[in-house]
Amino acid sequence: MLSSGTKNMTEGSVKKLIIQFAIPIFLSQLFQQLYNTVDSLIVGRFLGKGALAAVSSSGPLIFLLVSFFTGTAAGAGVVISRYFGAGDEKRVSKAVHTNVAFGLTAGVILTIFGVLMTPAILKLMKTDPEVLPDSIAYFRYYFLGALAIVMYNIFTSIMNAVGDSKRPMIYLICSSVLNVLLDLLFIGVFHFGVASAAIATTISQLVSAILCLTRLLKKDTVYHLEPKKIRFHKDILGEILKYGLPTGVQNSVIGLANVILQSNVNSFGQDAMAGYGSYVKIEGFAFLPITCFSMAMTTFIGQNLGAGKHERAREGARFGIAMSLVLAECIGLVIFAAAPVFIRMFNQDTEVVRLGVQQARTEALFYFLLAFSHIIAGVCRGAGKAIVPMVIMLSIWCVFRIAYITTMMHFIHKIELIYWAYPLTWGISSVIYLFYYLKSDWIHGYDRKAA
Image (cartoon, rainbow, N blue to C red; front, side):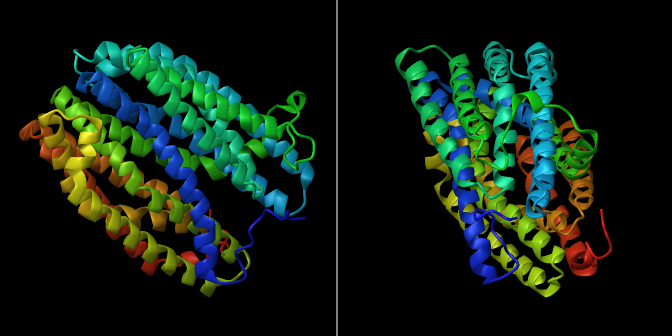
């Protein structure tokens, strides 16, 4: 039996349902982005461009390592929501406990790997020797909290799967506020240094994970967690990996390409690293409408195709695509115009600002291409074709992007060519996605029992 918190998107106004579903996701992603940005903002303002470069150099690698596990674990949300809708509480319980077991295992592995391999990986990424000590310190302290990061994502995927999205958002807001206060205390008041920013993040993530765990331990919920029952159930684990592995691989593919791109940026020195890192944080806000509508599309398309409502699914896809493109481009115009102001928020060094603005004005006007690629990827996942976006991202956003960067840097060592790697690959993937969307029979994905 479905709970009152579950949203049925097969009846009612298409536009209203999609917007209502997307808004909470948008708010959660907004605070998540603030959470990720505050370290760089405070570090850059209080500790200078060297410290900002140290934090920035770790970002793509952190995303690469964390996103695979969290993306794969997201597959549990699909499994839990399906059994929850069918009223099969026994399998819901098995899926919850299997997902938690997966998270604990992944978190421990990630912690050990991140702490031990930090120096070697950062050197492999050509991190500027001047900022390498701070980068190592930041990276290691961050990964001491990897278990909390993974478990927070595991817990929220469980709650979201049964329609309980309000509490994860509240918990995230609490941890975001705590992170800001701790950053200001550690760096602004006590002047502890760049590593304290990672410590603040670790503490904040731990608090949010504990808040989620407290809720899951309550006996009045369908997702009640009993510690003694935490273990792997082979059949459920197989389903989790089936739905989540393509997303995990896709996330890692993007992360891998960005790690290689970051290593090339690092070769231009700490000014370039700081400028690049500042812009990436700003771009994260442009990504918000893309994320929320992509997730909304996956749920909307999945529910309606599952119910056999093909034209309704097509109508929802058209609306989601249009909204995402318009919002992303509007944000892009704002970033293009106000780039100097935004970059100076992180660091006021003239060269850092120049490089950050240069990147912003190279990429911002092409956000509609980024939005289109992600929205169609969301449609594909909702239609049961999760392998499609994984293959496209692997071939274009990883293989082609890496080949382009490697070739350009070998013959023409100019940072502007690195900036152009993004709109170029967004454009190519968008053309492929457009062809697939118009020519393939994605609308009958479940009818044909597509993978």
